Amino acid sequence: MPLDLRQLRYFAAVADAGALTHAAQTLNVAQSALSHHLAAMEAELGTPLFERRARGVVLTAAGQRLYEHARSILSLMKNAEEDIRTFSENPAGIVSVGFAHTAVDLVVLPFIVAVRERLPSVVLHISEGLSITNVNRVLSGEIDIAVAYNTLEDARLHAQPLLTEEMCLVGKPELIGPNDQPIAFSDLSKQPLIAAYPVGSLRAIVDSAALRSKLKSTEMLEIDSLATLRKAMIHGIGCSILSRASIIEQLDAGTLSARSITFPDLTRTLEQVALKERPRNRAFEEVSKILTDVILEQAESGRWVCKEKLQKGRKPAPAD
Image 1 (cartoon, rainbow, N blue to C red):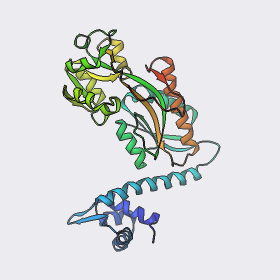
Image 2 (image 1 turned 45 degrees about the vertical axis):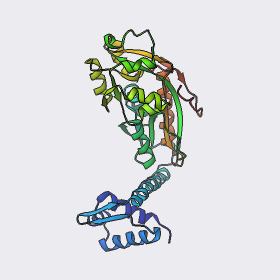
Image 3 (image 1 turned 60 degrees about the vertical axis):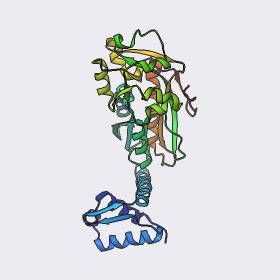
Image 4 (image 1 turned 45 degrees about the horizontal axis):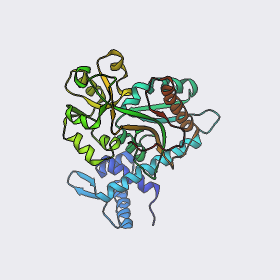
């Protein structure tokens, strides 16, 4: 017998609770019935989903894979139900958006204001995180839209390119040299580099493994927070590879400088990311449009310094 939604809900509840007893209380079902459903699922799939321990249960590798599918399926069902209930002339409902750190400084406030003015019945859930984290949260169904950089190709995702930024050597002027003089990539190895967002970020903007290895050998520190990274650079601890959009206030104040990198140039592309199969209710569509408009308005005004604004549906060129 194929799996059904009730079994998936029960399975996900047990995985979240880590114990049959707690899950049964949450679901308001008998523990014996819950145990029966899990046993039936394991028999149907031909593999254990949980490892039973003295103080509860943990997912097996197969169980973890099913849990990811279950979260996505249950989220889609919830969105479909909400879409039908709230289908009307006025967009309504909850839309969750996860922003990359740089986008938070430039976009979140005007985005919130625009949504409140144009879509008063829509409830926004805003979060901030690394691009890779936000994309994974879209895949799991935790958030609806991610504003992320250099998304990897994935058949489950629709990624709409918005703009391409130049990546620069950033640091105190007395440490990295004049703003108006580019620096060759080969000279970066002479700098005390602080790695920004180590999870996949270097791979995303530097295609060559040989070039990446040259930079990795000079890294003296890894910082997973843009705010902390800025403070470290202002203090003179080191420099990093960032876009100008990441340090607008510091550039204006003269506390940090940014030098273009050449031979090769380094770029990254900002994208709006969502699940291809997600039901597109009116609230989602309108929020997505406002988000795109706000980002492109920031680029048009010159506040978000970028090499190129990208049109809807157009794929970005690979970084040099």
